[in-house]
Image (cartoon, rainbow over all chains, first blue to last red; front, side, top):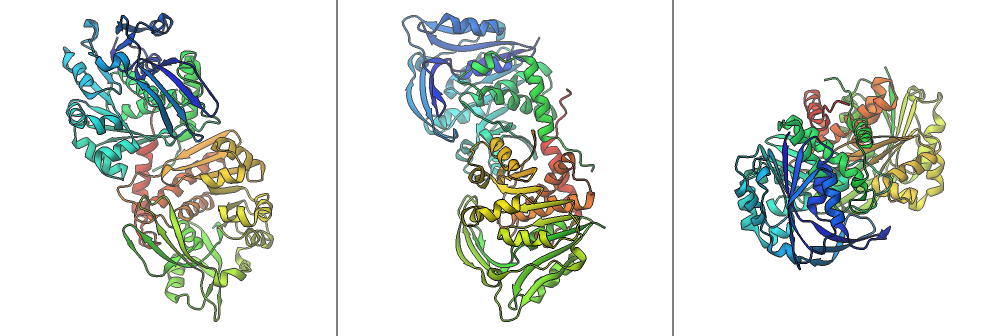
Length: 307
Length: 307
C-alpha cells in the first residue's frame, strides 16, 4: 500500500464566524490534511508536535482514521500551538486574534522509520526549514513532494522558502500569495514564474472561486461547489491539499491528466469541510456522501460539445 | 434558419485601461451581442437607436457580419449615446467618467416585421420598459427570451424590472447584482429567489471568476479562460450573452444540458473580447481561432473520474 507522509501543525483553534464561535477545538494543517487523505486507500502518518495539554481524545480520533501518530511528539509541560481568528461577514477574510506558537516554536520534525520511504510527501504550511528537514530525512526519493506555504514565510523567511521550493514537485498557494511570490498580477504569468523557481506543478487556490493547476503550458481548473451556506472556511485549503495528495498516493499515477482528478477530489472534500466548524464535518463524513458529491462535481463542470 | 432578435444600446465608448486609452469607438451592448452571435448559423437583427453622428462605417461593419440593421433608427440631428470609463489597475472595477444618454433617452424600439417571429430574443441591458416593449411586439411566442440587466435599474426602475422579469426565461446578471436583487449573499440562495421572480434559468456572471447557470436544483459552472493579459473587459458580459443566445438559436435545443454548452460558447467568445480594446478582437476573429480555444476550454475543465 502506498504511503503518504504528512508534516504540519497540530493545534488548538478558536474560531468565530458570523454563525457562532467555538472554544478551543482540534485544528492545525496536519489533522485537516490527514482526515481528508483518510478517504483514500493508503497508509498515512503525521509528523508534528503538541504539548501535554493536548487531549488524548484528539489523538485517538486520528488513530481511528488510520493515521499513524507515532511522529507526533508530545512535549511534557509544553503547550500546544494555539490560533484564534474571527471571520468577516463575507467569510473571505479574517482577523487573527491570537497566535501562540508554544511548542511549535522549537519543532524539530522526526520522520518515523516506517515512513522514510513514503511515496508521497505532503509538506503542510510550516517554517520552510522544518519542511526541508523532512525532505532531508527521506531515505528514498519520494515519487512526489507537495509543498503548501503562505505569505508569512514570504515576508519572514523568503530565502529558506526559495530553497525548499527547489526541492519539491508541486506547490499549493493562494492567488494573492502567488502574486506576491512572483510579482505578477496575471495568475498565468505568476504560475510560469513560480514553475521557474522549482515546482513543476503549481496549484493556485482561489477559495470560493476554485483552484487552478498549471504545468508547462497546460492548465486545469476546478470550481468550488456552490453551497447554500459556508459555515467555517478554516482548514479548507488543507483539506483540499489532503484530498489532492491522498488521491495521488492511492492511484500511483502522477501524470498531469491524473492530477486533474486529484484537484477534483481535493475540491470535493474541501466542499464538505466548510459546512461545519473545524474538523467536525470531515470526522463524521462517510464515503457514500463523498461519492454522491463527486457526481455533483461532474454535472457542475462536464459538458459535451463535440470538437 | 433560426432568428435571433437583439435589442440593446449602440454607442460611442471612450475607454481608459492601465494599458492605454481610446477615442470614441464602437460600443454598446447590441454590437457586442451581435458580433458574438455572428459566429453561429442564424439570422440576427439589432433593434436600437443612434444619432446622425454615427459613422456609416460602423453600420457597414455590422451588416458585413450578417446582422440586419433595419431596426437601428438613425435620428437626424441627434447624438449617439456616449459612455466613457476608466478601469482600475486590477481591471475588476471602473469609474464612469461620462454618460450622455442623448438619443437613447427617448428610445422607442421598433421590431422589424421580419423579426417579429424570432425564435430567440436577447434583451440587452436597457430600461426595463424598453425591454418589455420589445416582447409586446412579438407576433409569435419566442422559444426563449433572455434578459440582461444591471444594478442601475434595480435602483431606479425596480417595479418595471420585476415586471419584465416575469416575462422572460433566462436572466443574466453579475454576482453583486444577484445579491442586491435577492437580498441573499449565497449565490445558490440568490439564484433560487430570482427563479421565483420569473426567469426559470439564472445565469450569474462573475467576470474573471467564470459564470454559473442555475435551474431548479441544478447548477453548471464555466470558468473564464485564464489569460496572460486582460486588456479591456468592456463588453465581456455582452459578448458572453451573445455567444449564449447565438448558440441556442443555432442549435434549436433549449434544454438545461444544451444550455451548458451555450454557457461554454459564451465564455469562450468572451475570452477573446477582452484581449483588445472594444470590439476590435471580435471584429477580426475567425472561426478557426474560436474552435481552437474551445478545445482549450475542454482541457481546462474536463476530467475522467469514473463514477
